[in-house]
Image (cartoon, rainbow, N blue to C red; front, side, top):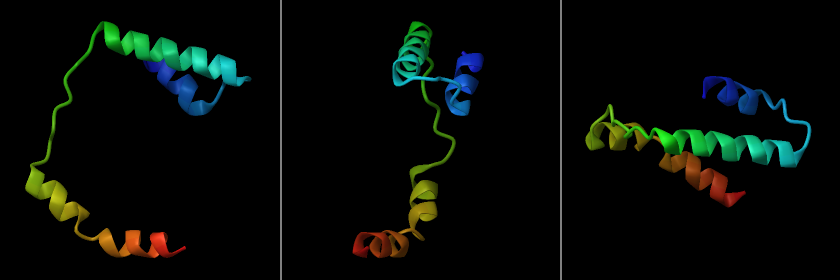
Amino acid sequence: MSRLDQQIRRGVNKTVQALEKDIRTWIAAGNTDPKPYVWTNTADEILEHLAGYPNVSRQVMRV
């Protein structure tokens, strides 16, 4: 899957159809051997990290 990951990130596809085909292939490959997402931070750590963002989001919403 890593080769396809790199291709999608680099934007090697010449057409939207080719990109869509590669994305569907990537999804199918991920679904054949799924792995659970493992959280590395606690909920409190995530909320603490996000505490600095409200001011930024308010500024963006005003634009």
